[in-house]
View 1: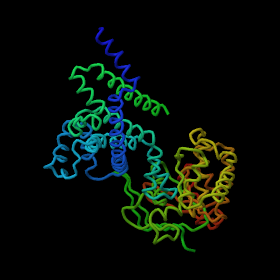
View 2: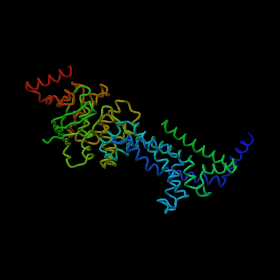
View 3: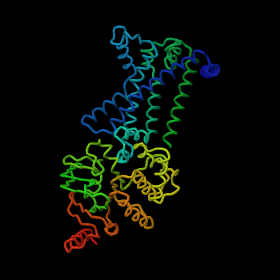
View 4: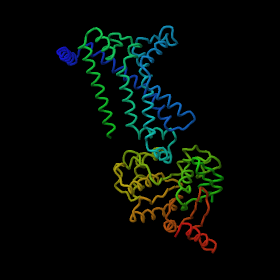
Length: 228
Length: 239
């Protein structure tokens, strides 16, 4: 018990003293996850919207595929993109492996199906009269789609937050594509894994507390949105 | 006079159970038309088809001389107010401004038209009211004002009096009667034959997706044949 209490006290000291290692890992996590979620949203929101408002042959298959992609194991994404970005891979010449950009690409792959699925659910659950109302007021189909997004904005925000929650907490992609390089690609999750294995439990705990705080903040925000 | 809406051999299929089939229907500008018929006869489908929201599987529908325009441009000539209208999030003013912005109308002209349309719908002072806080009757009138502000050539109303109390109904009828003088053709669906008679327009009766009857305007119903036709419609409505 004393070990846990001592570790907790040390962890709080590390956070409150803005320890450089801790701060760097937090910054890298927030930076890569934020970039990944921006790109995932740019891709996932239109996909979810398009699937939601268009009825076509093969739509069910696409939705099933999207659902399957939501459960993608992070190490599998890491493995595939490792092959793509490694020197012998098709994108090897870009030299992205073990850089934050490789991590961003991997996290984007993880988050896009989540964002698309949440937006699809928001469109499916939206009032069916919205599109007809906007169209009869003279909007083109594109303008109507934009207005629909505005009407379901809380659902879209929930989609983005859910995607962010997934990528900030993942470890497989960050470890395999980032390489856990100190000061460059070491995130909160990879640092926790490394430091704990080295016996630096207090350090890992400090990052765990920050990670939990981020998750708590994200969930609080999501609840607030749902109440509106 | 060139018809404002012209329908020829139109076929609209809704699922496996219902088909709207209209051989020929021309609606003249600046008139009131009342669409009548039992529930499920196809009144709402016909109105949505006229509004170009439901596109026919076969046939041709021409709206307000917009042959070469794209669908959005054609839709800007005709506005549908549904039986249970949806108001966009935001204020009453935001709702009225939406269609105007799409037409490039902004600034003082936008404001003037919004205030005028609200006054027409007896909604003075409602500009900044939240759409989500309105009562059923107010919501219906805002939807009407949102359509009127666009000054459409054709105004389609799907059972517009279903949520209107008796006091508002009188004002609503007066407003509808004035619209043809402002260049608007009104097509409304209703179960209220007396309302249709008071409005004095032509009556169209639809059953099982087909137009089965058409009477002239009440003021033109002089001949014995026309009176007989009117009585037939009256009987069909159960009056």
